[in-house]
Length: 83
Image (cartoon, rainbow, N blue to C red):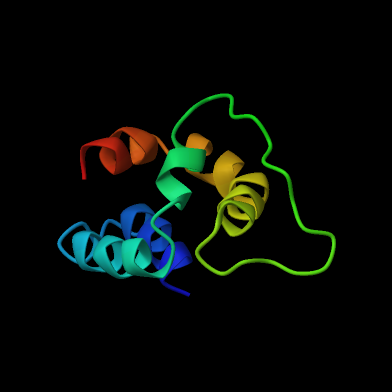
């Protein structure tokens, strides 16, 4: 849940709470930022059987499902990059 809380806090103008949510999200899956920030990112080899929590496949799947929301939120990706 922490991954989604960061963008939700940012979108709701809850900037004082966003860094805490971001810290929890990094602990959950620190690779997401590396997949989320670049405009283009190569797809990693995904397992056909499972998702490695905290792994490249989880980060890729988050990017695929949520990057458009981050990109559509003015300032969100820039904030994430500087956080």
